[in-house]
Length: 289
Ligand SMILES: CCc1cccc(CC)c1NC(=O)n1cc2c(c1)/C(=N\C(=O)c1ccc(N3CCN(C)CC3)cc1)N=N2
Image 1: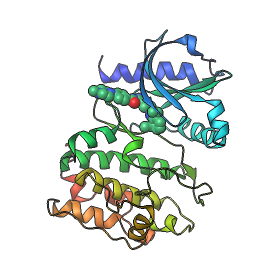
Image 2 (image 1 turned 90 degrees about the horizontal axis):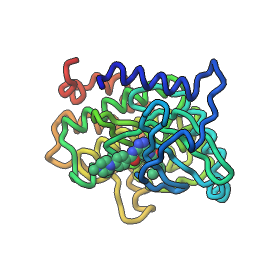
Image 3 (image 1 turned 45 degrees about the vertical axis):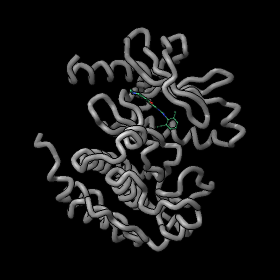
């Protein structure tokens, strides 16, 4: 199946699921042949599934309503659905639709056939500069798309990034995304490695926090560890606040230059996304289209 009519098929399925013109067809589990589990999350599991009429492969993310209520996370989920349903970009995992019964809320998501970037990183230790450069370029495109819609992701890290069959990266979890400007209300759960200095100090933050995370991610893809990684949270906080990191010798000059221009304490001094896309480390690996 070539790319063109694959995209066409996708549009058919998607428009049938969530076209703004016709009321969205109310989907339920009966519309899918549900396959094996492909992942476990805080609120539930993800299954591979095939939509019966179109044969289209999707990921069904089933979330326990009880768990969502217990964690007071239903508002965050509503925001995630609102934001992700309206985003259309090759490097953002599509939310094709959703339905619920009295136990679970099910998200119908695009299937990313090569799984989590995080697992790739754990298996290979660190990526080759060419591979990391391609992923960073794709992420910079996706981030500039969401920033133009005044959305910030706030949680760019390997655990939230998936890879599809064509080695395209997909931003997959918008649970922490908000409209700019914003002040974080809930405590951050999960790794602190990606939090920028302004968030460590609880200051107001804007879309430039995604530039910081892009720098942290670039460092982690190329070295296999996060730049401010420490056993304890307070030690991590301290190093983030002082922007204390060292670049290993094996990194090329251009890679070091891009990381240094993103990991700037002052958000205004971070390299804007349009300049990231023109950076020598990005251009030298861009396959000539
Ligand atoms: C687990 C649920 C969860 C919780 C929190 C955040 C996220 C986003 C990453 C998620 N995942 C999520 O929403 N997901 C939406 C998704 C999705 C996850 C997914 N694919 C996979 O998870 C996956 C995993 C492993 C895989 N194989 C591993 C072994 N290889 C040899 C062959 C390929 C192939 C696909 N496609 N859409």
